[in-house]
Length: 160
Image 1 (cartoon, rainbow, N blue to C red):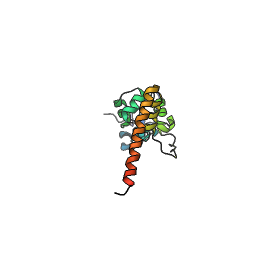
Image 2 (image 1 turned 30 degrees about the horizontal axis):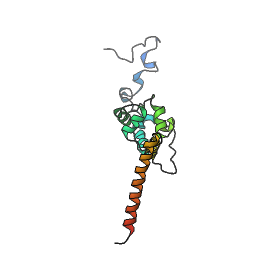
Image 3 (image 1 turned 60 degrees about the vertical axis):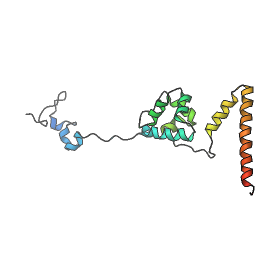
Image 4 (image 1 turned 180 degrees about the vertical axis):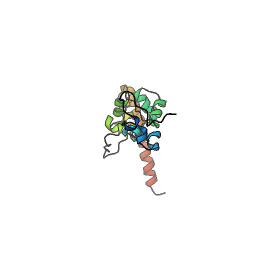
């Protein structure tokens, strides 16, 4: 049986005990255990993606449709993954209204002063793209719902 400390190291001709990378210089635990994995800035990517998606008013399916991917892919990236999808980062950042750096967590998120209902805004933008006749019908339908709600509120305020 050979002792590692007395064997010469190839290529250097140095004895093992004086070689700078000799594991015998370190305590046993130092060279037999793997260091713990540290979380990088992208390590919390999934949790950050969930938070940003919800604050933007998207469901997983809606975000997937916006990006042109499946809902399962969005769910996967919201999981415990540390590897954000490089090809989707620009689209994700644009859809969620943040920069790529904010999405990755290398820059802090800048909170908006006024809370926006981006889900409602997206619906209104979709209505704007409809043809004139359909747009008129949708507006009439919305007006009917609004008038109905106002009437309910007035009736609730009146004494019985």
